[in-house]
Length: 265
Length: 270
Ligand SMILES: Nc1ncnc2c1ncn2[C@@H]1O[C@H](COP(=O)(O)OP(=O)(O)OP(=O)(O)O)[C@@H](O)[C@H]1O
Ligand SMILES: [Mg+2]
Image (cartoon, rainbow over all chains, first blue to last red; front, side, top):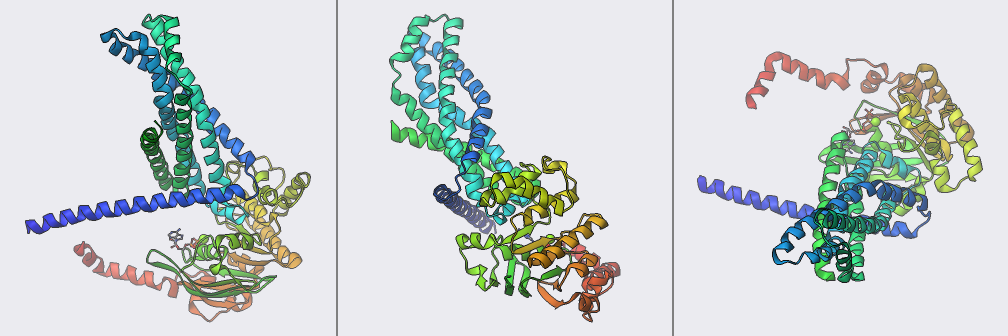
């Protein structure tokens, strides 16, 4: 009796894992199909130029404050932490380099990506989800409009194009934050600090960070739109789609970050 | 004008059969009204015709072409011939009334931008609305939304119109204005249309034919006059709006079953 129950338990767990894995693969496939539909939408008229500009404003300008504040404090805390570490072997003059490299290569794009996942991903999923459950997407279809082309494509293009721009600002503000903390709070030599910031920073560090940012923007928009499009059943369904969009796009940011880092450097 | 022929249409959600081998012919240039109880699948039927929902079996011929066999690209072409009024209006809530009504006109570049304003004004006047172009859908009453939805559906002058409860939520006078509009569209432009309604007064007024949907099938198609005097007990219960009859008999049996104390048996099982 006990044996049987145990076996049941194990097979239940396996079954559950199996269906979860199957669903994940299926969903990945669906997201990819959505991507292909975007690509075909790209080449067919009409061009969604105005729509793309509107989304760029939505993704870019509205996200700028939160991304800048995040970057500022990241740079500041990096300066504090690396100062206290490097002090132990009298290497505090390297703090500038550490801050600059960490921000441009890693923390600038990743934190911007995570903030945009939360802000823009949620907004996209909620908006498209609401349109889905109130039949607005069906209405689009009846009005001779391809909803993927009209709704998803502009968002994906806008997010892909705008995130690198956000990250340029984030890099700058983050490094500035580190400078202020190091120079004004910790008493670093300003000339030495600026000098060390430049000394080891190469152009590659910056543009790999921007490539990462573009990929994050692409993934966030695609995943969030996918979840919004598949919302079902009223307000609760929209809520569920929004949560899923934020969780999935944040994970996509972190996972793709690892793989891009391991391939690019 | 195109005739719509529906043969053996079946649509399931999970294992729930909503449409069960439905047959219906909608003659070109005529208005066919579909009546039936709430939740019997009337809206689902319209969505299948437009290809918004993929039916499981059957064929839907629009002017001879089978929609069920089409891929998405061909469907786009066919859908341009349609206008649809959704049950919940389905206005785009991020756009004002003018942009809603003009949506298809702008997408299809049907008129130069200068003319679009006038066309929008004209279509809104047809549904009895004036000077509301700059309002957002959230600022409209339910009946106004419905009428804006109707103006949007007719804006690009489609050959086939599908109305999902066009007069629900309107006052009797406005309901009659909409009835007249539906008749006018048919008479003057020869539009083929399917209307869904619960409002029998409106149905008698606008219908060339009335079809009754019951348990996934069309059980009777006839002219308004014939439906009014139908001998089919299901149809006559519905059109006369009686609480007693075959449609509700199943519920009544259940109520009697519960009253008799059969309900306690159900509870014990749980
Ligand atoms: N997307 C869906 N998923 C699952 N079930 C659905 C879906 N759409 C409709 N149904 C089911 O199909 C049945 C018919 O729905 P439909 O909306 O066509 O009813 P209706 O005849 O239009 O009713 P009403 O007069 O109240 O509008 C309902 O029982 C509903 O639960
Ligand atoms: Mg309905």
